[in-house]
Image (cartoon, rainbow, N blue to C red; front, side):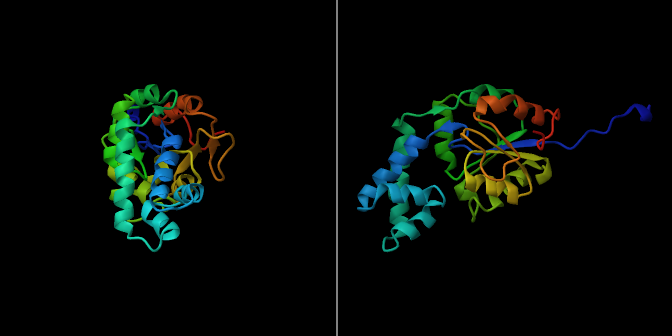
Amino acid sequence: MASDLVEPGPRKSVLFDVDGTLIDAVDNQRRVWAAWAGRYGLNADEVYRVALRTRPLETFAKVAPDQDPRKCLDALHELEDDDVRSGDYAAFDGASELLGNLPSGAWVLVTSNYEHRVRGRFTRTSLPLPRVIVDAAAVEEGKPSPVPYLLAAEQLGVRPENCLVIEDAPSGVEAGLRAGMAVWGVNTAGPVAGVHRHFASLREAAPSILAFARLEGSAGEG
């Protein structure tokens, strides 16, 4: 009978940042940028401080404005690709179980890195891959612009208000908020400004993330 039909609710999706959220690669990033800075005679700590807030081409413009940005990028890519093959890193505790239990097609990766590196790291850490990865090459504007997260929602066919962003960094949190999405912070000692919920670890957040994806909870709770 028509009166017995239940109208399905809006489909929800989880949009994950990668480095610092699913993959513990902070030390790797620091080593790569230190090696890059060494090639150009720059202060490694200063370069890394800028790199945390900007995409590579923007970083080069700030720390090495007299250098050819394409050659700078080639050097960085060489170092990062080598790290994917031989670097020592791991998935955060609970990542494999969480991703493996999410409904198929209900999650996506949104990264400032490049897809081939993400695939390499996920393969080495035995993490499952989603069907959609929005990487640095997919957008003209990176985080903190909302463009990467809005593109991910568009590719998934989900409205921004039905998306949950999982982030660890201020620029990613800002990107998710500007996209009109719920944003939860993980893997930080305290909440990043603006997050709707904060969890000290990904494992701590996992039950709530699964509940959201299965339409059992609200991203704004807590």
